[in-house]
Image (cartoon, helix red, strand yellow):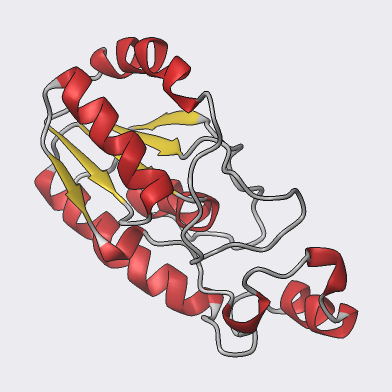
Length: 178
């Protein structure tokens, strides 16, 4: 079993694109740790994997301390790189570019950013490692990687158009072995 956890809310204005931008967690995030740790204890995880972004690594470290589990940051779990869109309001981005992205999220690349295909390739390698290890673990990451990771763990085609998990949400997936 793999527990997929999206980082809690961050300290940034609503409606801002912040993929790779390292933004801190919003105040009050620690209040959720006891209940979250209690839920996660039920899967008997052996390890916590985290995006190196502080909004994920901070949470992973707090859970690791609480559950006495090792934490490893892995670049494969970073959020999609939105390039020149980083730090800009979604409403201020060119409508034409957003339409192109919606038509082909696999091939579209924001200016200076990363394609959806790049995200899938990056997360696929990580998912393959988890499937081979076949050990219960916790993964703390972002909406982009967590949008495709459940399908990759189950060996089904991922969709970049799937709804990303909510901020702070937890999902347990039974990974297919191999």
